[in-house]
Length: 418
Image (cartoon, rainbow, N blue to C red; front, top):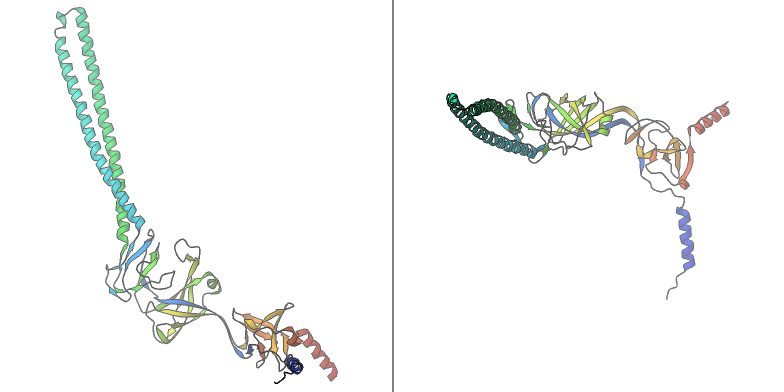
């Protein structure tokens, strides 16, 4: 049976560990070279005609699309291009219609009631006239009656005259009241008819037609960036379709607030079109909307409209094509550029860790322009050197170089040379 020599194995393991302890670890590195620095914003956009007729959602509508014409369809003036639905407008229309019907029925009922009241009042007037005529006839016989009977007949005649005047005034007053009541109800009906006409116009406006002859291009939906579809929600003044009037194009960009703040007018833009591989185009930012709009109705998150020109391209893209936009904020040619992850801060200094054969060197550097991904090194690094992308452990950092030490070293060498 073979015996295991555990003490010798233990000594060998300790020796192996002591030999590997001082070897520098294998870290991800970056080789320093001169290249072009670019601070860019990459964002998606879509092509629109530079000049076009647009069909937008009416300002009072907050509804959904029930029909929208397909992209690329040729239309003539008056052709239907989009139909919207808004339940609140339909409910308002139906409610006003019911109120109008009730008001018209109430007017007819009032007219009938007034006609009955007028007939009864006229009957009372005629009855009073008959009684007055009888009283007048009786007055002819007063000379044959006793003084008392004569006095009674005279009082009855006065009473009949008073009642006649009273009924005539009441009849005149009733006519005025009835006329006023009828006019009030007629005005109510007119107002309801006007409201119903307005509601009907809103319903009619939800069926939108083409203002000119041409090819229809669907607008992009703000929330998804894709073409509008049946069922998508729409609201006031939201573009629905475009009808180009020429072949000049622009690119529409919907930017977040963070990107919007970084982008400036006249910044150069480079385009790559998804549906046209190899069709490279260039342009510039020509317009920034000063006010953002919600990504959807009542949302607090806003997006900002940016327009860019298409100044040169191999082939003119069709309206509606999506594209990848590379907006160049700053560009510096032939300079030292390193990744941001390779730059560290130590004691208020910007430092990098330079790789040497058996050690790492912490070296102070000065920086220039930067972007979220890269930074220019203006002092402290040379092309051909290699730096780490992760910070080494302290035990492997054998050298530290700062600008003060470098200046002191240079002064010492000058004194020795003298």
